[in-house]
Image (cartoon, rainbow, N blue to C red; front, side, top):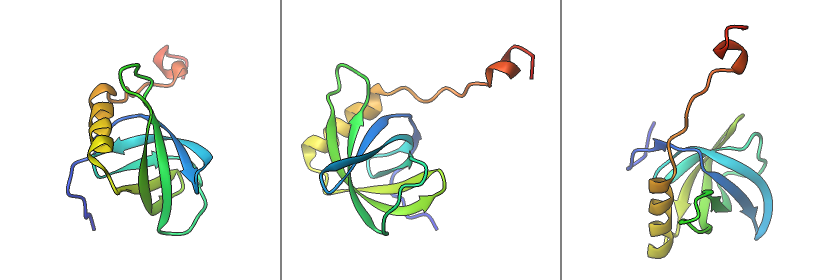
Length: 118
C-alpha cells in the first residue's frame, strides 16, 4: 500500500551513501520527491529501518553538494526505498534546486539494437 504524500519524478542523481559518518557505497536515484526516493544500489546490507546520510552529487556547478538524513524503509534486489528525515529549510531548498536542475533520465536502446545488429 502506498503511503506517499508527494509524487516522485524520474531523475538520475548520483549520491554517496554514508552510515555512521563513513562513506559505504555510491548509488543513483531512479525516482525522487521532496519526501523520499528509490536509490539504485544493488544489495546494500543493513537492518530495517536503517538510518543513512546521502550526499547528492548532481554534477551541476550551480548546485553544491549537500547531505540529507534518510531512513531505509524497504529493500529490493536493485536498491533501497528511502524517506528523508529531519529536513531543515536549507536542505529542503537544496533538494528542490537539485530536482529542478537535474534532467529526467533518457532511456537508451542498447547500441547493437540501435544500429540494427541485435
